Length: 305
Image (cartoon, rainbow, N blue to C red; front, side):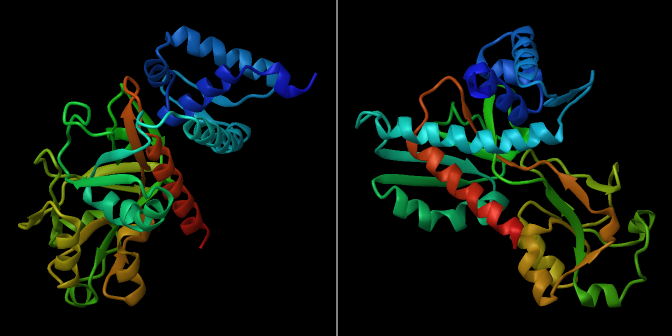
């Protein structure tokens, strides 16, 4: 008997859902199971594979090296299964028509815009509607098929699929600003600098999250200018108006051309990945998986460069 014959595909799906949600509770909600059923499925899977896939504690769940590798391979396998089932889906059940997604501006710039040409070629019969806004919304109530958020902002009752790896947040400034101010060597010195405030979609001011190694701290920084748009923040930083807290990936071009420089790189913090999320209680548009696959492939290639 092969190892495949000893494993239940349902248990593999439970494992993959735990990896996507980051918790047994989140997986149970998405799958419509009890937490004990999810825990039992994982014990059964690990026993049949004779290998440990997850490290568990009272506060967190993390994958072992074997578990992480298996999850990556399962993602590809389940994607192919989903694509195969979509191919035999009857016309009129969602293959054609409109795909509506709600995304925030950074995700629109980094994920959606690069994916649109390939998506249009792959799904010429689909009308793609992308609404860009940074306010938190109920995508089901407002009629969207899916949305994109950072993982920790996805509601617990939603299915969340990671689209990228962990994201690196950095402090950046223009050379002209850095030339006019004393060098920064520690986060305590931020108090004497001008910082561009980041306004979240719920109108709250974002505290800069900075880390050194595994230690992270959230700092409220000084500054009279508050902006809720990344493009405007980048423009203000390039004009020498102050320090900005930004996704490193979002300012790759500015860093390459030298119009912005990273400050205190040793305090750059790793943040939650981008996630596509959608309701587990509604039929999902078949083209949504195509879009997710395109985005994830492009992100994987970008990390290899």
